[in-house]
Length: 387
Image (cartoon, rainbow, N blue to C red):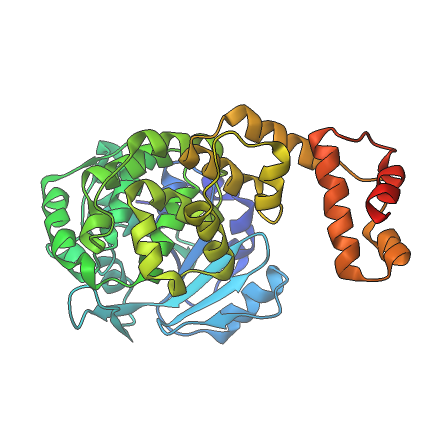
């Protein structure tokens, strides 16, 4: 099967590739799937049957990139700032044990490379150079796309890599697919082998789901299938109402990933594994799980506790603590709008000591938040607190 040339021209990111005509170059995986579904290309995955420094240089020149990074999996990553291009040599994989990272070796055969992948819909390639635009589909992924079926490439796929269970849930709901019988059976393999998966690998899967349009229904299925529980028994429950609230208030950004583990029992896991989280994430979770305030609080008290936190941390804390949402919204609105008429630098010039000046600045800010003084009255109030 050939892909029509005009369809490729509708993707500006592919235009430079269409002028290259030397080594065998293939667009692979999710890129081919998205082209067939007329979806936008967010990243670009390319496979070469043999290493080609000339092609890498061609890409870097055309996408105005000066540096690239190489991974242990025969892959070179080129990041233009707007687009990430992964260029890999065709390879085969061997998993030494269930859940372990694969050992890779070059195979010089695109078909072998396609068959090692996770699902049939991600196991297609498009020949870009030479410009045949032929669709290579050894496992019937195109037919599965048309039938809206998600099918694993082989028995034992989720034993080799149990994180594929998370990806199965993601693809199912992103594309409106249904699992075939073999894929459903593979969830049993994930159940057996998820315990061997590292924190970082789980984190990356949750990060990817966080940006999805239908992330709520994806997390709900993860809960029903107890995938996080099979990974670590701390995640032994699911609060679906809390999940809905988090989906409503949190941005579709990877940085929000850890919030979505809270309804599954993150607090217990976090207390035992704080060192696994980034510094910012650790501070946010300590605020959420360790700051106990009475429900009858004021905007000033909220600020004393959360002045260093972003709005999402404050909103999630309010939900967990049962604080009136209106109070939190009012606090965040005032915090965003208030700009004291005297600066911290001005205060340092008055009192000399930066620490004392900062404490005065915070007092003034809280008084403005509470409405005890009005904008323009800061200098009069400063005279009072200094005297």
